[in-house]
Every structure is written in C-alpha cells, then in structure tokens.
Image 1 (cartoon, helix red, strand yellow):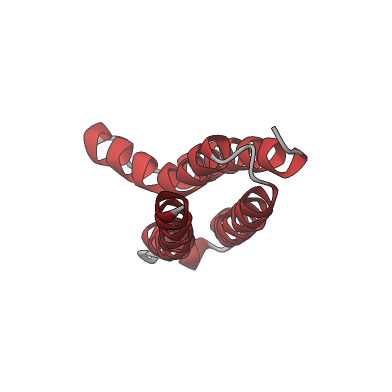
Image 2: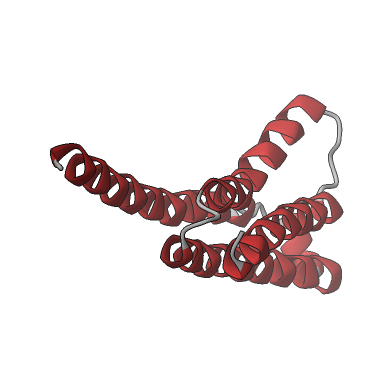
Length: 135
C-alpha cells in the first residue's frame, strides 16, 4: 500500500466522522430521526467513497496520489464550510433562526468532484485493459 493511499483512506474516514459531528452539533430538531440519518449518510458518502477508491487502488502510486489530493480537497472543503456554519450557529442568533442549505450543498459539490475523479479513473483503467487485451 502506498503512503498516499493509506493517508487518503484515513483522511476520508476522518472527514466523514468530522462532517457528521459538525452537522450533529448544529441539529436542533431530532424529531425526524430517519431524515437525519439519510442526511448524515448523504454527507458521509463522498469522503467514504474516496476512501474506498483509494483502498481499491492502493498499489498504483499515481492514482493513489490523485485520490489523496481529492480526499484532501473534499475534507478541507466540507470541514471548512460546516465548521464556519457551526461557528456562526454558536455566535449568531439570526443565523440559528434562518434556514441553511450548506449541509445539503456541501455533499452535492463533493459528489460532483468525486464523480469526476471516479470517471477519470474508469476511463484510464479501461484504456489500460484494452491495451493489455490487444497484446
């Protein structure tokens, strides 16, 4: 396993846990637990998917490096936005009373980024398989 793959896996898992914790700290209405669980799963999906992709490609140095930088971007972006929201939630009364969509927009942007990297990996690996089959 390459160093980048190991770090991408751990970073993705840590980011998923951190994002769920930040959102849980901002949740005031726990009456509809099923909807909250779906939102938590949607939020944790992109970092965990990057971790799975990094684990599957743990022997490829270049792909592990790309997945590490993807995991870093997903983690920094998600934790920064949700961390800033938690700060404003704790300090600004008006922010607490205003509906906020960042907990939905963050995973959508993360899924787009992760999907683009996954698509690139699929294309590259498909080309390699075709080239290996022609030999």
